[in-house]
Image (cartoon, rainbow, N blue to C red; front, side, top):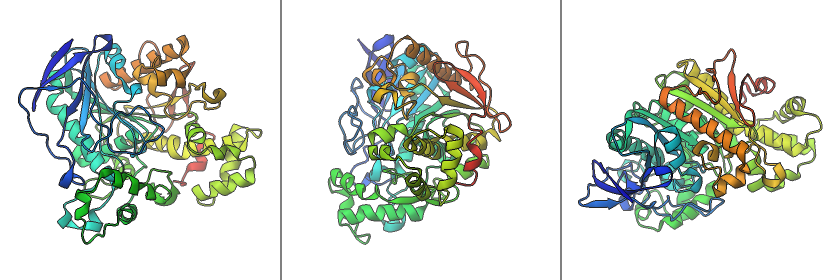
Length: 507
């Protein structure tokens, strides 16, 4: 059954999907960023006559093939969004805008785990997801290398996200949503994008609330470091800064191939600008001082004081990467080797880190598990904690969670790894990804309902408390209340108390 709705550009034809939810896929929110628009700020989409077919997902951003196998087709023409709504009416439901993860280099809003039908129906919310430019096409910082005559802009992936949020403000009322009650939520690079959007002046007023899952506001780099990454891309393409014209016409596959040169580089990151290895995450938001100030510092100063925030991470974040990206690290069986590795990431404080984590987690724990715990905290849990600390000083509607459901993968060794919360948030634990990651079953379904209801409650009122989970205390730097989400859901005080002192001044 087809469903129609209007946006400013014209009429759309979607369809009635699962759970009786109306779904509109592949809705253009900006002009295709191709040709001379390839490295420029997001441009307005043209209107159309007749009815646009909005029943199929459109292309994901150009990217390498990787662990994500269900991203659909890839295309430079990628600036499309999708809408799930319980009804095309005037109900003015809370709106939740999803920003997918993938290290700023891979991913798609079409992935099965992000199907928002259950979230829209059970939460009685209107859900929007979007694609945005990735990798060099979205985050190569060419401004200083090419100069003003090239008419390139910084942070184009973030600019795409802001353009999508503007589309939501202008149009979502026609889809049963309330443009004055928008929550952005995202995971990994999607959450890191939210950390940047909280600080970006152009995003101000486009959302009222934010949920950052396994990502925060520390993942931005400097113009100097970003220029160094962009120079590697240009070198790989054989393009000199003096004559950049080929950038507008060469196949985007060549750009994707050239950006791999950045992946082995370390970049300066964080408030203290330390040189830190980031894996493939080197083409990331740039604190250029104009479009984007340094995100964490701006939030600490109160730039997002009007935004309610929920932030958290998973208990065993790094196990995902340990098993699927860097399996040789599981061969670490000696603390001396572990200390050498940690010294590279922690500015000579490797021995102190290992001693601290051994005392907190147990002397008998294998060295590779200590490594995983340290890396998970360095990249995810500690940045999330610092974001909560910074925002709670300005807005009391700040909440923290720790997701603690263990995946059955690899004999249960994955634990509560990176991304394991996704099917619980979207209500897709019965899908292929959800079954593999959660194991399925009544307990997983119950936790999914509790999690989904908390996310929807936060989007509705700025408070994730609900009958199925009880009172969720606000976060402050005195109690540091955090909701544990797992087989048992309970609020606890300062779960990082034993580890937190080590991280003061590290990143």
